[in-house]
Each structure stands twice: as structure tokens, then as C-alpha cells.
Image 1 (cartoon, rainbow, N blue to C red):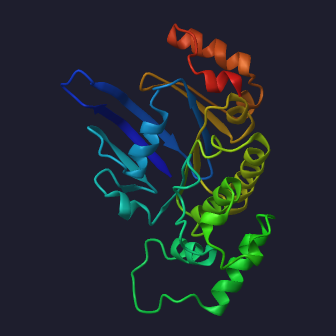
Image 2 (cartoon, helix red, strand yellow):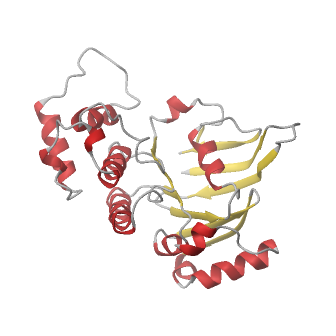
Length: 264
């Protein structure tokens, strides 16, 4: 479902601020893979995710989704088959629009625009049923402005919007990092459920080592623009945080330098 071949990315090349973010990364995800990605500060985690999403162009390499070469496809065209949830709960929704209007935009993502964009009675009922699955009471607030929701409610809504059209690939960029622990656990539980129920292929960048171990069927660790660990199945289930720290030190020759990950 996802094939990355030798992608490279350098920011500010030829300047004093030059930063080599990706050093020829290759990665294959099969249909239904749920991969968690962890690494220290500046490891290349979010850069890889942004490269897949098309937020910026890569310098070298190629990216395929569902067998289609999307390397040179602009970000707005990738939105037709990619779902994405950001770290900031404010980024995935339009604050000044109603909940049902946000859901309607998500449902129509990637489709041709016509004159019949009003929300129908059937669509409104479908939205209400979908919101019930969040168990946050939002099904009774369809006309409320999204800006009035809490961060957790908004992130749960963003997640629902991201999976509505069953994207070929779901990208989760530290999507619980800005939430309190209880709310983060709720959003992660919803994440697991949506991915399992829809058979989605997903990639979740996280700073939380426990979450990286607990969720998904595969774990990737990055360091200095490279993948230094790719573990799955039963081997992944047996991992501990201590194991990850030991593996990191062995593979990189240095101590894991990310206070957020260590304190989570």
C-alpha cells in the first residue's frame, strides 16, 4: 500500500542552516499494516510523514501509494486518498464552521465540485450515527461551531473526518501529544478501533515509547534520517521501553535524546 524508495531531503542546502533530514529512506507497508514510528529529536519522523503527504518535495527517491507513483503529485491531489491527523487539534478542522459542515467537507474531499453541495437529510443522519461512535455527545451538537469544542473533542472529530472515506493511507503525526493523558487514551482507543474496523493502513508518529509498543503491528525507530529498527508481530509485542533504549544505543552509538519520550 505504501512504497518509499531511497527518499532524501535536505533543508536549506548550501547554507549555514543546512539540515539533512532524510538520508535515503526506504520503507514498504502492506495493506492493513499499522506502523508506529519513534525516534529522538530531529530523527526524521515528521519529515518522512510530510514527504508522504506532499507537504514539501523530496530531493531524490520515489513514493508510491496503492501502486500509484505520487512522487510529483501536489499535496491537494494526495488528499483524495490520504487521511491525516495533526498534532495540533486546531489544524484538522475549520473552527468557524459547524460540526456537520466540517463532516460534509471531509466526505466530499477529493471529489469534483458541483452545485449540489447542501447537506441532505440522509447525510445529516449518517453524520449523527458516525458521531455516536465517538461517545462524546457530539451527535446532538451538529450545528455547533467546532471552535467551541475541547481539544480532545476536536481531535476525535478530526480523526473521524480523516477515516470517513476509508483512505488508502492514514497518517497520524503525534496526534495525541497536545492532549492530557486521559483524553489521549480515548483518542488512541478510537484510533485502534477505526483502523481495525476499516482495515486501514496507517502510520503513527509518536514521542511516547509505551504507545509505540502498545499500538499497531509494527514499530520503526529512526535516527539522523535513517531507519535503524523495523520490528513486527510477536517480537514487537515482547518489547519494553528498556529494550528500545538499549537497541537505540546499540544501533546509533549514542543515548536516546528526547525528554518527552523518556518522561511519557
